[in-house]
Length: 599
Image 1 (cartoon, one colour):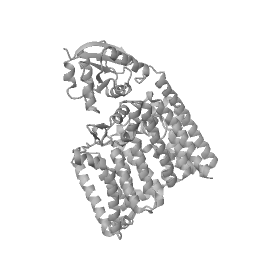
Image 2 (tube, rainbow, N blue to C red):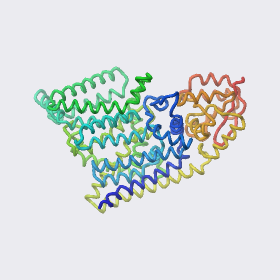
Image 3 (cartoon, rainbow, N blue to C red):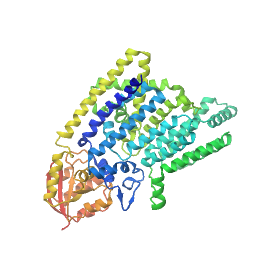
Image 4 (cartoon, rainbow, N blue to C red):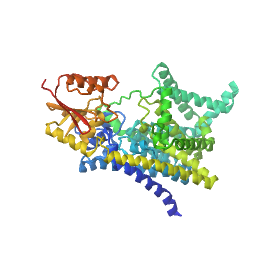
């Protein structure tokens, strides 16, 4: 029996690691400058005689992943496979934690089925989860541990409280995206407390006696007001936003005071809050150290905007299908339209069935009623899904970035798995047939996509990471005595990393990663300007470049780029105006311009 229980998780996890590992090790398909910059950061971890706690001097990415992998990269050099292996290790840990958490909250069958659907994730999700981004998997692993800690019994209460604070602080240091888990933690603790039960009962009693409003309506009104204040506090920058923030803070402070007023366990609450705060400070200690001793105060800019109809439509059409494993309508050619429609209908049905099957705890959530321990599973998963979707809709970055919605991906798998598990339990044969058909359909879809990855990695002549293209570029630069210059961001750090930093290119956009390396890239008397690669979707070559071989032609190109809203690095145009063109040549997929300062 124990062997059967182990196999029910080992087999889907092994299947998932096989598919994700295949994508990870075909890294030439997806390796980009974000990941290359992470690798360089790990290789050059200690700079200026001290450890920097923020990746690339940014305010929102902690250096924990780089600290972990730095010793290995020091031994292996600039090795993409090593970076991807670390990503797979984090992914394996996440699958294990996901299985434990889902089993505890919704049962082993739901956990096992969800792992199968996570193994057959859509191509954008497969790509994101197998890249070593500097914030993604370490933070999500910590967040999964946080959810596990929330669901534990009250044994070792003080240690549990400390761990909750520590995990939350460490996760927030890795990336601010994990604030979602902090919100979920706070909501679970508040609605599960006996103090909130008393406070909400008082609010309901007052509204009933004073205004004659029924209890459920009162609770829903309170929920709607809190939701409005919260959303308006973050997705708007007008005067109303500041008012909403003040009202929301006053409301939260009032709830805190009310909890201490009505509680019969004041000492216990103060001790618990102190434990959580102590753990949080310890988890965030690298950031606090950086602020106190070096004055690097984070300057977070507002990144939330009011969602438009266009953003909502774009998310529904081009991100939501990916979360559930289907290609987006833009890629429907890879799946026959009738099958895509059937799959979308089944996924929508699974979501509705999940909400209906968990309607009792979800109703407690939207009416802010007291929740019991057995209600936590549905509420945790639904909150993670809904808050992630809302955040993605309101995030000012482009909607077409699945990594910003990645928290909702395992939750989508759980929602589908829970509904299929219930169907199998009630209509055994029909449920098994439907689940098997969905798995076969997704496997066929993934097989097509994996075949494309093989082609793009090893056969496609347009791949900027192809060994032949990199060899041609290195030979050309070496022949002409060039060891640096400028390139588009999505090429610059790829070239730096894959050439073992023998050739250093700074991005001509205002996206700075290594100021020291960028100064070296600009130190030569002759610099190479890489426009392209010619087939890269991020650098569509302008007609203004056709046939041109003058500095003015290149200036017109960069002026056009700037007009599209892409920020160029300060002084770049002025620097280019002082250059003299030596030659222009197509090298593999790269359009290479060589310029000199001697003008």
